[in-house]
Length: 164
Ligand SMILES: [Zn+2]
Image (cartoon, rainbow, N blue to C red; front, side, top):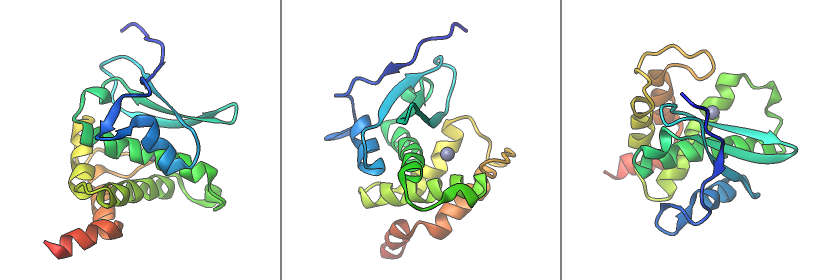
């Protein structure tokens, strides 16, 4: 398929009421982040990168068709990578899986703190991106492992579980 150029998601586009994509990213990262629509509409995924010292989050165009709350948990995960990048904590000694699962846990935690069901969104995000529950992934762990890790560690979401 034809390669489409990345384009900034219009800064006024809301991902939840009163919150824009770049507003969420800045809230998590602590600095301005450009959030761009990337790839072709068949590609699903998201990525954080820094170019010339400036943070960018790529939301692949396949993701932008998903329900906004699923997009939100994916955006929160990438924004947490931005936070890791700006953080004083040296994450370089962490394994890739540790960095990824740290982002998973914080994404769910932040979603729960914003009033969403972060555990549900985490669990639903993998099939929404076309990832089978036991799909091997050496950088992230399988979705099954990721969901179990988030359930065990997302403190703000555990509170919700106990309350229900
Ligand atoms: Zn990640």
